[in-house]
Amino acid sequence: MKNLIWIIVSIIIGCCSTLIFPQETLKPFIVSPLIGEKLDRIEEDYFGFFPVVADFHEATFYLNPDSSLLVNIKGYYHNALIDTTFRYSYSLSNLRERINQVVMTDINENKVQNLEFVTEDNKSYEGTVYSFNNDQIKLIKRDFTDFDYQKDPEEYFPEFSISHLQTITIHKSSTAVIIAAAVLGTTFGALVGAALGPKILSRGEGWFDFRDVEGGILGGILGGLLGFGAGSIINVPDEYDARDADSRRIIRENSLLQSGLQ
Image: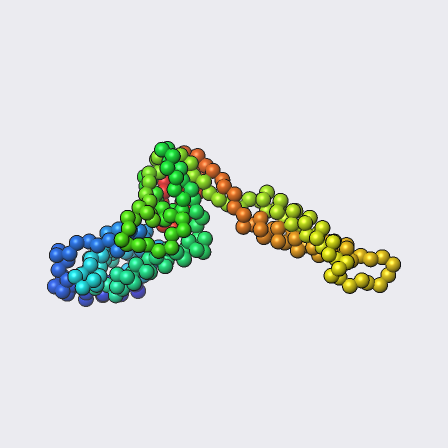
Protein backbone atom coordinates (compact mmCIF):
# COMPACT_ATOMS: atom_id res chain seq x y z
CA MET A 1 0.00 0.00 0.00
CA LYS A 2 2.83 2.40 0.84
CA ASN A 3 4.43 1.69 -2.52
CA LEU A 4 1.16 2.50 -4.28
CA ILE A 5 0.73 5.79 -2.42
CA TRP A 6 4.37 6.66 -3.09
CA ILE A 7 4.14 6.05 -6.82
CA ILE A 8 0.88 8.04 -7.11
CA VAL A 9 2.30 10.97 -5.15
CA SER A 10 5.53 10.81 -7.16
CA ILE A 11 3.72 10.91 -10.49
CA ILE A 12 1.44 13.82 -9.49
CA ILE A 13 4.15 15.93 -7.87
CA GLY A 14 6.88 14.94 -10.28
CA CYS A 15 4.89 16.15 -13.29
CA CYS A 16 4.79 19.72 -12.02
CA SER A 17 7.75 20.00 -9.68
CA THR A 18 10.31 20.70 -12.37
CA LEU A 19 8.12 23.51 -13.70
CA ILE A 20 7.40 25.12 -10.33
CA PHE A 21 10.75 24.49 -8.69
CA PRO A 22 13.74 24.85 -11.04
CA GLN A 23 16.06 22.61 -9.04
CA GLU A 24 19.10 23.47 -11.15
CA THR A 25 19.02 27.08 -9.82
CA LEU A 26 19.33 25.91 -6.21
CA LYS A 27 22.18 24.31 -4.34
CA PRO A 28 21.84 21.45 -1.84
CA PHE A 29 21.34 22.85 1.65
CA ILE A 30 22.63 21.36 4.91
CA VAL A 31 19.62 21.39 7.21
CA SER A 32 21.68 19.96 10.09
CA PRO A 33 25.29 18.85 10.63
CA LEU A 34 23.84 15.50 11.71
CA ILE A 35 22.45 14.93 8.21
CA GLY A 36 24.52 16.91 5.75
CA GLU A 37 23.35 17.64 2.20
CA LYS A 38 21.71 14.25 1.74
CA LEU A 39 19.46 12.21 4.01
CA ASP A 40 20.42 8.59 3.40
CA ARG A 41 18.43 5.44 4.08
CA ILE A 42 20.01 4.81 7.50
CA GLU A 43 19.24 8.37 8.64
CA GLU A 44 15.68 8.09 7.30
CA ASP A 45 15.17 4.83 9.22
CA TYR A 46 16.18 6.70 12.36
CA PHE A 47 14.30 10.01 11.92
CA GLY A 48 11.31 8.76 9.94
CA PHE A 49 10.74 11.93 7.91
CA PHE A 50 9.16 10.12 4.93
CA PRO A 51 7.36 7.01 6.26
CA VAL A 52 5.18 6.78 3.15
CA VAL A 53 8.24 5.96 0.99
CA ALA A 54 8.67 2.22 1.46
CA ASP A 55 11.90 1.81 -0.54
CA PHE A 56 13.53 5.10 0.31
CA HIS A 57 16.98 5.73 -1.19
CA GLU A 58 17.96 9.32 -0.40
CA ALA A 59 16.64 12.86 -0.05
CA THR A 60 18.31 16.18 -0.80
CA PHE A 61 17.11 19.46 0.70
CA TYR A 62 17.14 22.88 -0.99
CA LEU A 63 16.45 26.27 0.59
CA ASN A 64 14.21 28.69 -1.31
CA PRO A 65 14.75 32.47 -1.20
CA ASP A 66 11.62 32.69 1.01
CA SER A 67 13.27 30.23 3.48
CA SER A 68 10.89 27.41 2.61
CA LEU A 69 12.39 24.01 1.86
CA LEU A 70 12.31 21.87 -1.24
CA VAL A 71 13.12 18.22 -1.01
CA ASN A 72 14.17 15.89 -3.80
CA ILE A 73 13.41 12.26 -2.94
CA LYS A 74 14.71 9.19 -4.69
CA GLY A 75 13.10 5.85 -4.00
CA TYR A 76 12.60 2.50 -5.70
CA TYR A 77 9.36 1.12 -7.09
CA HIS A 78 9.54 -2.27 -8.81
CA ASN A 79 13.34 -1.87 -9.07
CA ALA A 80 12.90 1.47 -10.87
CA LEU A 81 14.34 4.63 -9.29
CA ILE A 82 11.64 7.26 -8.79
CA ASP A 83 12.84 10.87 -8.52
CA THR A 84 10.56 13.72 -7.46
CA THR A 85 10.92 17.23 -6.00
CA PHE A 86 8.32 19.09 -3.94
CA ARG A 87 7.90 21.78 -1.29
CA TYR A 88 8.48 20.29 2.14
CA SER A 89 5.68 20.72 4.68
CA TYR A 90 8.06 21.51 7.56
CA SER A 91 9.82 24.85 7.83
CA LEU A 92 13.59 24.84 8.34
CA SER A 93 13.25 25.74 12.03
CA ASN A 94 10.61 23.04 12.59
CA LEU A 95 12.72 20.44 10.82
CA ARG A 96 15.77 21.31 12.91
CA GLU A 97 13.68 21.22 16.07
CA ARG A 98 12.38 17.77 15.13
CA ILE A 99 15.92 16.47 14.49
CA ASN A 100 17.06 17.81 17.85
CA GLN A 101 14.04 16.35 19.64
CA VAL A 102 14.57 12.84 18.25
CA VAL A 103 18.25 12.85 19.22
CA MET A 104 17.75 14.36 22.68
CA THR A 105 14.92 11.95 23.51
CA ASP A 106 17.15 8.95 22.87
CA ILE A 107 20.04 10.49 24.83
CA ASN A 108 17.86 11.46 27.80
CA GLU A 109 16.21 8.05 27.89
CA ASN A 110 19.65 6.40 27.92
CA LYS A 111 19.00 4.46 24.73
CA VAL A 112 22.78 4.32 24.39
CA GLN A 113 25.58 5.00 26.86
CA ASN A 114 28.21 7.71 26.79
CA LEU A 115 31.65 6.59 25.66
CA GLU A 116 35.09 8.09 26.17
CA PHE A 117 37.66 7.95 23.37
CA VAL A 118 41.39 8.66 23.50
CA THR A 119 43.33 8.91 20.24
CA GLU A 120 46.95 8.01 19.58
CA ASP A 121 47.93 11.67 19.89
CA ASN A 122 46.23 11.81 23.34
CA LYS A 123 43.20 13.81 22.27
CA SER A 124 40.14 12.84 24.29
CA TYR A 125 36.44 12.91 23.39
CA GLU A 126 33.37 12.02 25.42
CA GLY A 127 29.75 11.75 24.42
CA THR A 128 27.17 9.75 22.48
CA VAL A 129 28.13 8.04 19.23
CA TYR A 130 25.78 9.35 16.55
CA SER A 131 27.10 7.38 13.57
CA PHE A 132 30.11 5.36 12.47
CA ASN A 133 31.55 3.42 9.60
CA ASN A 134 34.80 1.59 8.99
CA ASP A 135 36.79 4.81 9.12
CA GLN A 136 34.99 7.61 10.98
CA ILE A 137 33.01 8.17 14.17
CA LYS A 138 30.69 11.15 14.56
CA LEU A 139 30.14 12.01 18.21
CA ILE A 140 27.53 14.13 19.97
CA LYS A 141 29.45 15.73 22.81
CA ARG A 142 28.37 15.10 26.36
CA ASP A 143 25.95 17.68 27.85
CA PHE A 144 24.73 18.66 24.37
CA THR A 145 21.17 20.03 24.52
CA ASP A 146 20.71 22.24 21.47
CA PHE A 147 22.73 23.26 18.45
CA ASP A 148 23.70 26.86 17.77
CA TYR A 149 23.86 27.03 13.96
CA GLN A 150 26.14 30.05 14.14
CA LYS A 151 28.95 27.97 15.67
CA ASP A 152 31.35 25.43 14.22
CA PRO A 153 29.70 21.96 14.16
CA GLU A 154 32.96 20.50 15.53
CA GLU A 155 32.11 22.12 18.87
CA TYR A 156 29.13 19.78 19.16
CA PHE A 157 29.72 16.93 16.73
CA PRO A 158 33.44 16.06 16.49
CA GLU A 159 34.53 13.45 13.96
CA PHE A 160 37.64 11.32 14.26
CA SER A 161 39.18 8.25 12.71
CA ILE A 162 38.58 4.84 14.27
CA SER A 163 42.00 3.69 13.12
CA HIS A 164 43.64 6.40 15.25
CA LEU A 165 41.89 5.43 18.48
CA GLN A 166 43.93 4.16 21.40
CA THR A 167 41.35 3.38 24.08
CA ILE A 168 37.58 3.26 24.48
CA THR A 169 36.02 3.57 27.94
CA ILE A 170 32.44 2.75 28.86
CA HIS A 171 30.91 3.49 32.26
CA LYS A 172 28.62 0.67 33.38
CA SER A 173 27.18 -0.81 36.54
CA SER A 174 29.17 -3.49 38.33
CA THR A 175 27.77 -6.53 40.16
CA ALA A 176 30.56 -6.25 42.73
CA VAL A 177 29.67 -2.60 43.41
CA ILE A 178 25.96 -3.45 43.75
CA ILE A 179 26.65 -6.26 46.23
CA ALA A 180 29.08 -4.12 48.26
CA ALA A 181 26.61 -1.22 48.40
CA ALA A 182 23.80 -3.56 49.47
CA VAL A 183 25.94 -5.11 52.23
CA LEU A 184 27.07 -1.71 53.50
CA GLY A 185 23.50 -0.42 53.39
CA THR A 186 22.19 -3.44 55.26
CA THR A 187 24.87 -3.18 57.95
CA PHE A 188 24.48 0.55 58.44
CA GLY A 189 20.69 0.31 58.41
CA ALA A 190 20.70 -2.50 60.97
CA LEU A 191 22.92 -0.54 63.36
CA VAL A 192 20.84 2.63 63.03
CA GLY A 193 17.61 0.66 63.35
CA ALA A 194 18.82 -1.14 66.48
CA ALA A 195 19.81 2.17 68.06
CA LEU A 196 16.56 3.92 67.21
CA GLY A 197 14.27 0.94 67.77
CA PRO A 198 13.69 1.51 71.50
CA LYS A 199 12.87 5.16 70.81
CA ILE A 200 10.46 4.82 67.90
CA LEU A 201 8.81 1.43 68.53
CA SER A 202 6.25 0.70 71.21
CA ARG A 203 7.31 -1.72 73.95
CA GLY A 204 5.49 -5.03 73.76
CA GLU A 205 4.28 -7.21 76.59
CA GLY A 206 6.57 -9.79 78.17
CA TRP A 207 9.82 -10.07 80.03
CA PHE A 208 12.15 -9.15 77.22
CA ASP A 209 12.42 -5.97 75.13
CA PHE A 210 12.93 -6.86 71.43
CA ARG A 211 12.56 -3.33 70.07
CA ASP A 212 16.26 -3.06 69.26
CA VAL A 213 16.13 -6.35 67.36
CA GLU A 214 12.98 -5.36 65.50
CA GLY A 215 14.46 -1.95 64.70
CA GLY A 216 17.67 -3.58 63.49
CA ILE A 217 15.77 -5.94 61.18
CA LEU A 218 13.64 -3.13 59.75
CA GLY A 219 16.64 -0.83 59.39
CA GLY A 220 18.67 -3.58 57.76
CA ILE A 221 15.95 -4.24 55.16
CA LEU A 222 15.54 -0.56 54.33
CA GLY A 223 19.30 0.01 54.26
CA GLY A 224 19.85 -2.99 52.02
CA LEU A 225 17.24 -1.77 49.53
CA LEU A 226 18.72 1.72 49.47
CA GLY A 227 22.23 0.31 49.08
CA PHE A 228 21.13 -1.95 46.23
CA GLY A 229 19.49 1.00 44.45
CA ALA A 230 22.53 3.22 44.93
CA GLY A 231 24.89 0.49 43.70
CA SER A 232 22.77 0.00 40.58
CA ILE A 233 23.14 3.62 39.48
CA ILE A 234 26.86 3.85 40.21
CA ASN A 235 28.78 3.34 36.98
CA VAL A 236 32.42 2.35 37.00
CA PRO A 237 34.80 2.90 34.06
CA ASP A 238 35.73 -0.12 31.93
CA GLU A 239 38.56 0.61 29.49
CA TYR A 240 39.21 -1.32 26.26
CA ASP A 241 42.08 -1.29 23.83
CA ALA A 242 40.60 0.19 20.63
CA ARG A 243 42.17 -2.64 18.64
CA ASP A 244 40.24 -5.32 20.54
CA ALA A 245 37.19 -6.90 18.97
CA ASP A 246 35.06 -5.91 21.96
CA SER A 247 35.68 -2.22 21.27
CA ARG A 248 33.92 -2.50 17.89
CA ARG A 249 30.98 -4.26 19.55
CA ILE A 250 30.72 -1.49 22.16
CA ILE A 251 30.63 1.20 19.47
CA ARG A 252 27.99 -0.71 17.53
CA GLU A 253 25.76 -1.27 20.57
CA ASN A 254 26.01 2.35 21.69
CA SER A 255 25.47 4.17 18.40
CA LEU A 256 22.24 6.02 17.62
CA LEU A 257 22.58 5.19 13.92
CA GLN A 258 23.25 1.49 13.40
CA SER A 259 25.35 2.00 10.30
CA GLY A 260 27.00 -1.39 10.13
CA LEU A 261 30.55 -1.15 11.43
CA GLN A 262 32.53 -4.16 10.22
